[in-house]
Image (cartoon, rainbow, N blue to C red; front, side):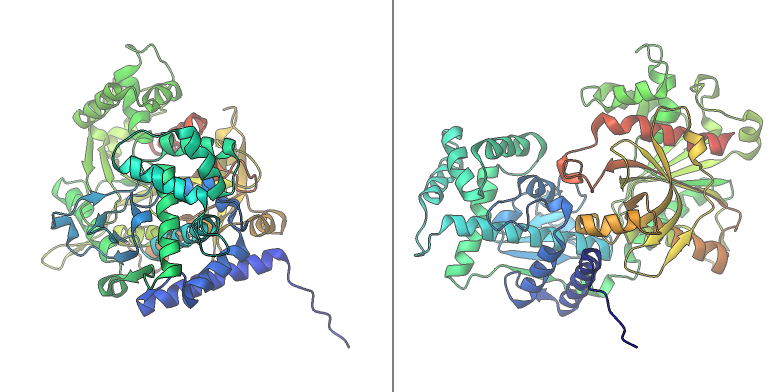
Length: 564
């Protein structure tokens, strides 16, 4: 009997490319260093080009430099990284006590230190997901740098006219002298393989959205280092410190973070009260509870959603401060992170609520509230695998100095996250029934206390079903996502934390028995993008006001489940 083996599908090839990427990255991490344009770095580049992730747009095009993808990546890397030949990835190793200026990327909270003209140190304290994320972004900019180099040097090894003109522009910028932007766009368009219109638009996007250097500056330095490496022995290199390699995977930062929180709860006699843990952003729950009391009359707003839009406007800084000040007088305390997790925590004591002033949208059983005196613990978003580390440590018993272990009285755990949707658009809501961990056999069905019906009559599209917890949002392409959407998985969206949270929760409730097995679980996500649509990926721009309605709809539903 002849067995016919079907050729691999594009989805299978893409998934194999993702697997290769992580194996190579892990090998390089253990080794301690590598050169991006060396043999090992070339392996990562080859796998990334095979995968051709949607978020990186035209990465596989040998001529065109990807502008939106470059903006997305630069916003998540420290300012000036394009100038650095040596990039050192480190753990928290004492640089916070040095005189080096701390550089924090616009869209990713990492402490970075520029120690000299050629070197930058980047702290990675969020686990392996953090390492994979930054290595993928760095590989992308090296691929784009090679394209710039090809346009800057002709077949005889001479500088092209466009490159010489860019050098003149950079010299003028360094001397803080003006130059013709229009002429600059013309030369830059040649070096980027883009039209004049695309280049001008890209420049303005960088100027408007990014806290980084100008597009002229970034293109020049990416190209310059690529040219110097090709013509001299000045190779670019990425290193991993010994301390980073030693600490990764051991919950070093998560343990410090969780112990500080539990110590606060213990010292303020809150540890034995019913605790409701919420993973969400740092404003939506505080605003949902307190904004109505502060702003409803003076601003003539009635609904929390309207107040949220008002507070989302950066011009209304005073209103935002007024809400926070009022909240601090009525039960809110903020625990700043000093551990390195970069996860801020808010504690809200409901005993101090301004009951008569709360929004009518909050359905509260006052007798239950008075009897139980619940406490809300709101933690900022975790990053990928960090979700397991932080939740696992948080749910452990609190150990006193005398060895006594006190369990925390967890009644519910809610996760409100932002995620990519596979069959909808920005601002839609996803309610998961299970989390499937990409690349593994780990599946986590959940008894979700939130249902699709809870969001009926809101005028928001809501979908319910399986969510995929991906290894990294920057590594997803159409073929893999369509497989999850159209196969028997029938996935509704993708995110990075759900499976990790659920793994920690199941371990705490079913194996360690540190929390009750009756803990209510509530998961809901609002759609930040649709990676299957080329103009709807994360690189296409922020969610903006499109996400306000769904964010606050989820927040209010979770609060009503807790209080009603």
